[in-house]
Length: 476
Image (tube, rainbow, N blue to C red; front, side, top):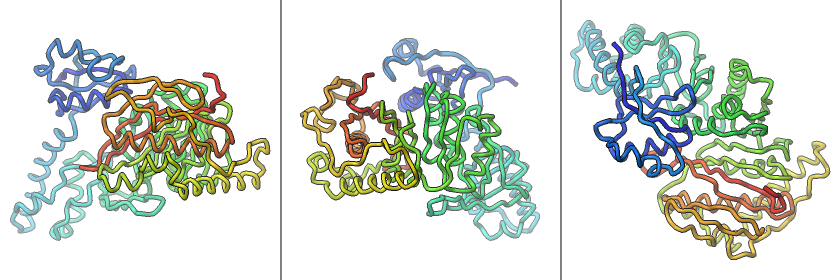
C-alpha cells in the first residue's frame, strides 16, 4: 500500500533551522523522518492542517531570510524511529512473553520494562543499548532469545552496547550476541561506511552537521580533518563538498583501518592522505584552506596545529566543535572574555605561545620549510576600540558591519544564545593570538556562523563554530 506525506523542502544547510522552527510550532510531523532528495535538498514532514497558506508564504523569511522552501508531497515516506519502534516493541513483547511462558515463567511488568525501546541499526545488525535485557532470566534463554529479537527487528546479527571507554581512542564497549563478524556496512547521505562496531564508533546524531558539510562549496580547496575517525566528515568533504584534496588525521589504528576501506569503497582514495598518530605532532603546515576540528567535548588541543595548517598567504576557515555548558559556573570557568581581552589571562596566553614554539621547533627538526616565519614571544593586542569583544551586535537576528584593527570591514551576527556567543567570541580572540604569534604579523578573525548540532539534555549543547581567519594584508 502506497502512502504519502506532506513536506516542506529546503536547502540542506537550512534543514536544522527549519526543523527547530517547525517542531517548536507544532507543525513537524514526527511520524516520519527527514529525507534527503535527489537534488540534495531536505524534505521535512509537516502536519498540513497546521500550516496555513499565509504561514507558508512567509515561512522562508521567518525561519532563515534568504532561504527557499516549497510545499510538496512525497510518496512512501520513511517512518520515524519513534513510530517504527512502537510497533516493533509491541511485537517483541508478544514473542518474548511466549518464549518466557514456555520456560514456566510468568510475564510481568519488570520484564516488559526490560525490553529495548530504542536501538541502532547498521545494515543487518541491531545494536541494543546497555539498559536492555538486564534481568537474570534472559541469560537462561540464550541463544534462542537473540534469534527471536533478530527475527522481530529484521536483523541477522545482534550486539549490545556498553559505555564508551574514557581513553583517547574512545573505543565503544560493544558485545556481539548473535553472529560471528562485527564489521558492518552503513549508508549515510549516499556515502558508504564499513567499520568494526566493537572497535569504532559511528555518530548518527551528527547527521545535520554532515548534511551541512555536504552543502559546502570546497571546489579547489585543500581540507585537513584533524579528527577523522572512520571518515564522518572526511568523506562528505570529498564526495559532496568537492574538496580537491583532504588530509585525514587519526590516531586510533582501528579507525584508520576502517577509513582506508571507506575511501576505497567510495573511490576517493586518490584524493586523500591519512596521517596516522597524534595530530599535534603533524609536520604539515601552510597548506589548508579549511580545517575541521570535529572532537568533543573540546577540540582545544588541536587549535595550535590548526593555525599552523592554515595558508599563510590568505588564511582560511576553521570548523571548531565544542560542548558548551549552560551552567553559569562551568561557563565562567572557561570563558571570561573581559579578563582575556584585558590581558589578565597571562598564564593561558603564555601556555599557547609555548605550545606554538614547540611546534615550530619540531617542524625545524623534521626539515620543514625554513622560510616559515619564526614565532614571536608576545601577543599582539587590538588597538582599535572595535575589537572582537568591544564590538556589540545590534540584536538577535540583526547584522552590523564593524571595522577591525586591520582597517577591514566585515559582518558580525548576534546569536540568540548568550553562552554560544560568549564562547565563540573567546575562541575568535584566542585563535587570533595564536595566528599572530605563529606568523608574526596581524590577523583578523570573523565569526561566520554557529551551528547547533544537538543537545545533551538539559544543559550541554554541541555546537560548531565556523571561524574565518585572514591575514590583515590579504585582499579578498
